[in-house]
Amino acid sequence: MFRISLSKVPLSRPVFPSIQNAQSRTVATTVRCNVPGRADIPSPRGKISTPQDFLKAIGRSSETKISIDSWDAFWRTSGCDMKNAGLSIQDRRYILWCMEKFRQNQPIEVFAHEEAPKKKIRGRGPAVQFGKRIRSRRDL
Image (cartoon, rainbow, N blue to C red; front, side, top):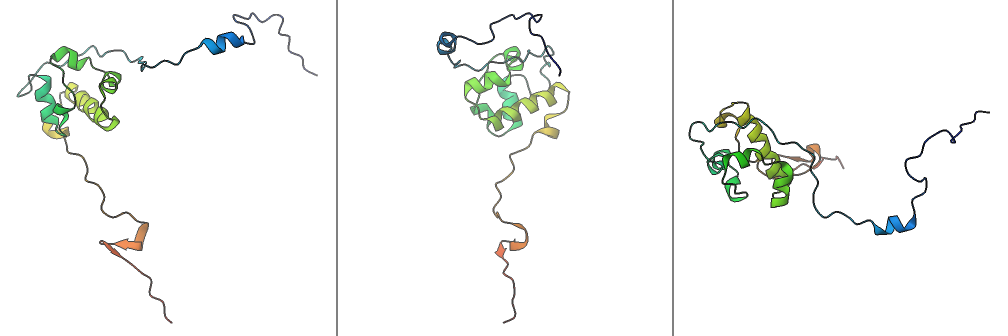
């Protein structure tokens, strides 16, 4: 039989937390972010001189969803800051993705694109083809 001795193991906290501690805990209402800010802030280039110009250039009406006046503050904005501002996850991901492409010196015309249109036909495989329902032909 194999034995483990717990007498030599130092315990930094009690094994069983008290009931009073469990009841006194409160749930945090703010979003915690451990993402450090990026150090490299790209310089304005071409027609892009303000954050609003950048948001207009990437499309998807991003300029109406977030407003930041300072160029430095815009490039230090994290996803959590955008979440606290009320942006949807799709908008946050697209804006952050475009910001990273701009940091990599890629032209906006190459990476900016509109949202994919909603699918009109939803079905399972060959049951729907070219917008028409396909029914099997049975010999009776």
